[in-house]
Length: 81
Length: 308
Picture 1 (cartoon, each protein chain N blue to C red):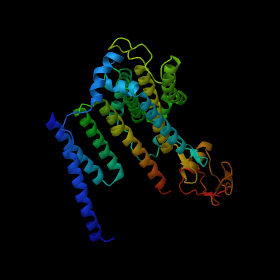
Picture 2 (tube, rainbow over the protein chains, first blue to last red; picture 1 turned 90 degrees about the vertical axis):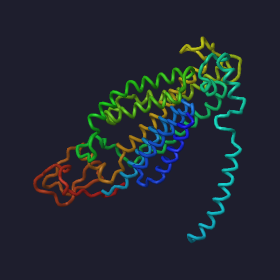
Picture 3 (cartoon, rainbow over the protein chains, first blue to last red; picture 1 turned 120 degrees about the horizontal axis):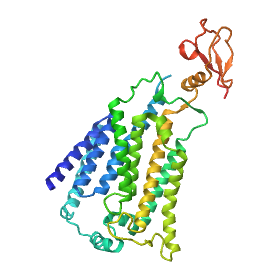
């Protein structure tokens, strides 16, 4: 179990780096959602299932969804006539 | 500031920070070694005292319910803030939903995505309701379950588009649910005072451990929180979608097209200089000869007289 936990932490560090290194905002949202999913798995591995539920819904679904909507809105306004 | 100066500033800061980090990590308790008494106390006290099997929920909705009340009102206030910021402005018009427009550039979701979303909606809603109503028995509770129910609503949008999303969910009912969810928590708290105990004290019978209807106010607060979270997140997503898909600033040429389509305006000889709509738009002085509908011909220019 501890090996799994250590591996998960390494994955999360790599994914966090990937979020920062992705520059195009809409791709960044997708990477961020994946990062949120990894966090949820980590919470399960550390025996915090209630937190994992919150994380998987809010961090991996609702927040990226809202970010995408906001990005789409900003882009539409910026689009020329 | 040049690059070398920045490096010279950065290097000592890095050393100091790394030093503190190593120092604090060295003093951490061993991995998996829990030292505080509170968790152990609650673990032994909560099940016999409150007849629940999920101690986390007992803490959230009973022992520290006042904190959860504060958190719920943080969510309530942010939902109101989002709705207020993204409300329909007076200079915006409701336009045809972009998803339904014929000249939409983005392809519709594929049949596979739509079928999968449709198939996933019922189990997701059911799972969310289960998580809300079993918060005192298994991991999860009002917040998690409410958020899961809302993710099913996102699937509705994915499967059927925004029109169906709006038609399926009665908005007034959601508003009511949002208010009831936030207010219900407070009412349950006040019920404690009415029963002669303190605010938010668990005054209801706690029932049989393991029953769905047990845990006293823990179960009730979990359900009101579920209502509040589901309604609140729905309102946020709805407001965002509405802002994105429906509200268009007049004058960027998109609101105008809707006005013209509505009136089935056809431009013919002699229409030059006429006003249309509510008088703010005027036909270009040089009309085309074939009388095609304005909305089909890109060469019919309409001038914004800016009479606002």
